[in-house]
Image (tube, rainbow, N blue to C red; front, top):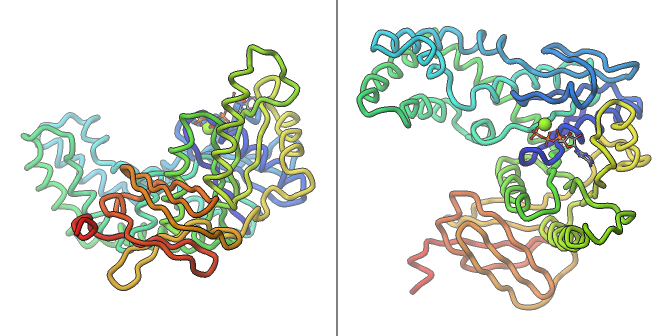
Length: 394
Ligand SMILES: Nc1ncnc2c1ncn2[C@@H]1O[C@H](COP(=O)(O)OP(=O)(O)OP(=O)(O)O)[C@@H](O)[C@H]1O
Ligand SMILES: [Mg+2]
């Protein structure tokens, strides 16, 4: 079983590439399901056929596709809790539709989508699962949190964020109410159990690979670095970076001269940033990539004979760990770069220099407040240790 998660900023081409990958895998003889978890679904548009909540066959392909609607999971895992919170809010004068909205936690939708994905991962029906729009923010944090129950409780208590002060005390009472109840606790526990089991599948690099999609421009690089950092932090492995909308060599019109120069600069920067991950260039096509034939053609161009669902790289590029009291990060480096190490931190960005090697890493929040202290080469990694800022200045 393989799961491929496509993630990236809005509009970079995730749906297109997920659909192409799925068609490629199906073409290679694998029973494939492509799932969109985005609320603003566009998978049906990309494939050029209607889709719904349950997997449906795509054309005459070995491929099934669905656009998730997590209503069923919402009812099963959250229905009772939601009604309790909503009712209590209404008693305090919050209007019904607003109360209904407030009773659903931010990120819950994504988590419920993950629960469904787990079901497909564990079923024997598919060899490959391609997921359009990987879980972000809240769901990733939840997956990474060692204590799910506490995370959730805290988020329940944070429910009132952004609401008027007047409402806040009332909300505190409300949220204290349902989570102490045994029935609801056990319902919550069922959800946590699902997420915990899913975490094991998502963090198994043999099963799950994340692909980062971006465009060769200023806007997407840092955001993609951040995604790489968080995926690594939560133990998911990224196996490739796909740079979409690269102007092909055939475009020689001077009008695009600056675009081409900039793209080539960003491509260099992207390769350097994510080295040693494979960077796949996806050319800008003559028109939108819509419909099965166009997507299949794109898959063939990108992956050739390689099964697009196979692991495209098996290196762990970025790793976070603790040694004694110290927080460290480790970057995979190829060969043994010689020279002095330069470490420079700018906001949440860490720049590392070692001989010819230049890297920049977006630091996760828990490291962003610390200072890099020293670095060492060990086991093919450049390991950087952090410390409290006061100590650095002494
Ligand atoms: N390489 C390409 N050449 C030409 N058109 C492309 C290419 N990649 C994507 N497109 C087109 O760009 C549009 C946006 O792509 P897509 O929907 O895949 O992006 P997305 O990242 O999924 O967006 P969203 O964040 O909104 O879900 C689509 O019309 C798609 O056909
Ligand atoms: Mg999309």
